[in-house]
Image (cartoon, rainbow, N blue to C red):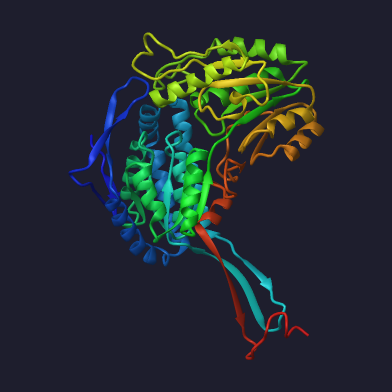
Length: 492
């Protein structure tokens, strides 16, 4: 199957385009072919979106929300199909695939509710016979650039608030996982979303992504991906005075204190570190453990890791699927070698899996290092794979300091039964998300999602906070005094 762009409610691509294969990372099977579109496709999509946005913005917000309700219902009807496609092209296990589709469904219904809110504020004026208020206004055409690890959830975090706020958008999905974008575009078409509101253009970041960022009629760019790429997006967008929303890397830690429920901590670490084969921006890649329980935690983790099943994510018994491609496989392996060279002790894993049934896919063994120094490269740099480093500390204060020592600030976690420690940690951990007695992953769609430092630039996906990316605040003053009144002057 050759995928086609979805522009202005129409499917199509130029015949002379280059197509590249979409590969199932579990077994190397070619699933589809995706076009590498040119800047011409971006020009066409922006022109269509710009024209459609003028009429879309005039549709009452509750009516715009009706489309999101319809999208959510259609996703619910197709949930299993969408999850199967997602697992095939991305590799995550089917249970996680279903969970990700559910996240998109939840986001559709949640943002549809905002169609009857989109609250502004009314406030007293300092002058007599004058009314003051602020309202949210749509911005225009939005460019969405999404990653391969959550090809549905992240796209819905961005596109659904853009829709309900009265914007139109062009979505450039990751080349590795375009089939989910194709499936979502079909749903947009099936529910009758007006032509030009939602547009999908496949292609490379260097061509399609750059064209979106540089186009003068694209007013907002929302990007999720690596910190290195996000920095370039911010720089390029800044030159054009665009609003740029960035959600980037993480080097997330689970803190295990000496009073922690170790059985619960092990469960949280395994889910956070090895779910999605460690390919989450919220993945736990550091375990900061109190010296008094370090030995026992290591023993429990090793025992639990031996029970992890690895293979094709469509197999319901499998707990860990493949990584996305060969490039990722070798990057992960190179960091394991760095860890060895730095003097960390390898307790488990540390190798590319070979032999049947792994030879046709991209599988890496769940890996555990101990005796890792807090400033080692494997404890500071994002690996984006199933690799965890254990770092020993002597106190909560030291644990917090180690957690905060990295350039990222997305998610953190602490396992403790001391309420005072829990409150001190949630105050002092410098991440956008903090969990107590849970792992570093599991965000819910009605709360803001994003981080500090090298993880983002202050904006948030998900929750009501997402609307701040896709709206402008407009202040309105209505003077019915019948005379000129000057603020700050005619107040006596």
